[in-house]
Each structure stands twice: as C-alpha cells, then as structure tokens.
Length: 118
Image (cartoon, rainbow, N blue to C red; front, side, top):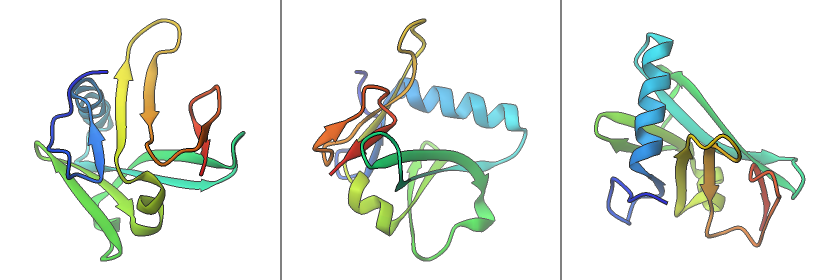
C-alpha cells in the first residue's frame, strides 16, 4: 500500500495512487466534481461500499468533507461511523487491480473486497 497523502486524523484516507486515479477520472468527467464515499446494506458480507462522483452543490451540512490537494471526498455521517479510518488505495495490476478498501472497522470482508461486515 502506498503512503497516505493526509495526516492520520482524516476520517477517510487516500493513497497517492488513489488520489491520482480519482483526479484522472474527475478530469475525464469534464466537471469540478467531488467523490462521495459511503455504505449501503447489501453485498456478500452485509454492507457494501459505494463511491461515485457528484456535483459539489449536493454537499449537505450532514456531510463530512475531506480535502486532498483541492480534491474533495464527501461522506455522510452515518456512513462515516462504518468507514472512519478507511484507506482507499488504487492498483493498476491486471489481476486484482482497481480501487481497494482497507477498513479498520470491518470484522469480515468479502473476497471481492467490495463488501464487509461489522
């Protein structure tokens, strides 16, 4: 895993590789969007991660916003209870590549890496 770009007190941490990748994807969208990260019920282990770009106008007072070199990650407070300390990493490996979630709150993780249990 690569080094985080922000101090450990951040609720959601990004590796430098993940930050590069989300900025690249954001640029392809052609808009100044933020990345919303959260959880929802479902998935193999009970809860699944969700992650998508959205317009910054949708940020609400109930959201926590984390700034990474001008790029914003947004997470609602309910999801943050399950995600606090999450490390989001990225790998371009042919097998097992893509975004990877390392969640210190997960008591179990599905083999796909996209769902977890607490």
